[in-house]
Length: 469
Ligand SMILES: *Cc1c(COP(=O)(O)O)cnc(C)c1O
Image 1 (cartoon, rainbow, N blue to C red):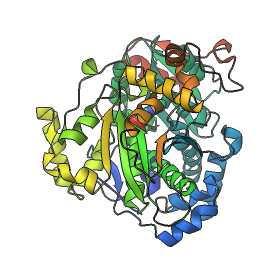
Image 2 (image 1 turned 90 degrees about the vertical axis):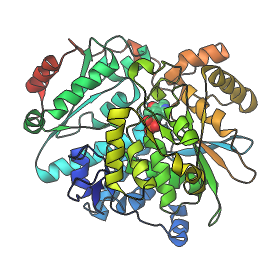
Image 3 (image 1 turned 180 degrees about the vertical axis):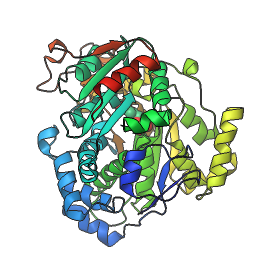
Image 4 (image 1 turned 60 degrees about the vertical axis):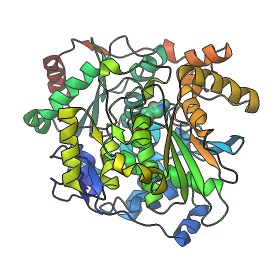
């Protein structure tokens, strides 16, 4: 399997290079040159596999420069039941009325990002060791990504993590999750600014090619192809666990922000998995819903982005969306490049000519959910099924309920556990979400964080002094 850029300006590369590279040199994103098709027969043979075994099978199509035996050990280590709250890693639970939850948030940080990050936490050290080098991961987080990355990389050989967070702007739970890690290779840098300013510092340092090379900077943000690949696995798993035979159709509903999670579902569908619909749910920040309704993609500025009670979806520029557009345009990289140029000059582009194909050819439908919808959905689900869902998952359930069809299971991705967003649970139900066992004392654990001024020079100096050599 070789990878090329969505904008056509990259020599084809293998998985390991794409893993370490991040953004393609032409500013585009790495995509497979062509997609593997999984036959009905192969799919049926996968029914008896465990989650780590299935992961090794699915990933073997995308990771052709790691041998099968090693890939199996990598997925076995990443998806070890001791790291997850579910023995099966990901489980499927019935809500009601044809709705199910796909439990992808049973990892160490209670959000679905653990699934991809745990794979990165195994595959990075493997590749770095084979190449005799090290990597300094630099990122910015407003919550879930940073903690998932740090838990996955803690104490891993050859890797250090420098994670910028906006000082004083995360929840007490999120701060405690990240800052309570004492591993020497984990560096929490709280900058005195907002998330976008932290993100700008990361972009400035990663864009300084000299500095990037000298300190071997790497990234784990959602454009990293390895994350997309690892997420494809749970769409196959969800299908296998909710069907009994070949060609039965299943729909998925996905609470979306950067378009990473649902892109993995789109790829699974293109690989032949019988997915009927991919239901994209947004909160009040509905740039993607607007695109699937009108064909016009108009990202918004940080100042126009609402702070909502499903904060991990407060995104108005979906960094993975370019990979979908590339597919929609049937791999016309020149057209993709010109659309993104238009985005830079005009602030939008118009693909309404393709409007009738979103659902017909790709199964995409979309909807919006509001704060009131989240509260009432959390209440309704609890009353009807006794299950507690988090606000992001509630956005998914709300939008999914409009698209349920008789005889077709609708799997809503549970993108976080309620304990992570307990303030909103309290607002909905009048009492906080229960803490998963082992996390009762999280906020009272000692914390390790370095406060820095919000400027490039301060972060640069810190990395120079602490980088893995
Ligand atoms: C990251 C995140 C999302 C959005 O996922 P994308 O891949 O960015 O679309 C939704 N819910 C939760 C809880 C998240 O952490």
